[in-house]
Image (cartoon, rainbow, N blue to C red; front, side):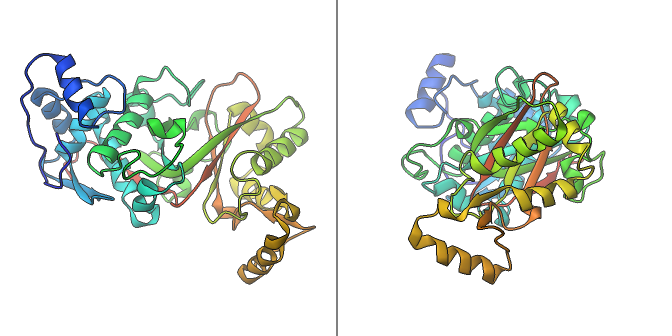
Length: 358
């Protein structure tokens, strides 16, 4: 497959074996720098068949080329990433979500900001396909998480045209963008309903949510009382990473991921996610003097126009309680949370359709 805006990928015969195929693709900027699986017609056909959709079915047009992402083209990139055919419905739903206007895919693909997509999977399919939502879920070792995230990135480059340094203008990028973050929520260990139910889906639905994320930082807790843990999580979300003092309030979400142990302790004080989000909005704030003097009054005036109260000269890091995305993931060991900042796009969810042909 070569970059073009046609609906069908183009088959090219390459003399030699896998090394020659990889060299051919690498020379054309169509890999992520890591070894790939050669996208043979047989492998691509198997990936297409797993979707129940025609090969020429257009899932969406991926900016900035606005090239049609057909099932076949997505399958080519999935094979290159090492995906098993069974994950194709997840990838198709993720690409459809990424191309939703509220995600601002063109901006995410071309900005100088290091933003890139993060995939969050919910529903029974997490177990069926082997997504890691337990220990080390953001780290190495999960075949499904790693290959689905990698396939997403390859598709955004090879179909959408976001070539680093040419169209993708991010001077630095960040490791979470190299192969798009892909994680599942630990629904079984969460004291609250899973995230996809907040987006309007049934609890037993299979759903993927895409967020535009540009950074992640750890919030390591050494406390053992719920009140202390809640305070540490709240202020760790506000004062670490890109949220703190970065033109707060950010019009895009802030993401809080808590390990099950932390979540249980927080839930003992705030039994619902609504209560937690309201607490975070009230308390996860940065001092107005984080801003240079020439920015302080315009910031105060702007927030007043938006109806956002500044209490004790502290500025909220997002515009409303609804701008906090709260997830539970990870294992039982240690008191760990993480904050992630978002930029340019809003969370977008899609159902994962398996074997429906629709």
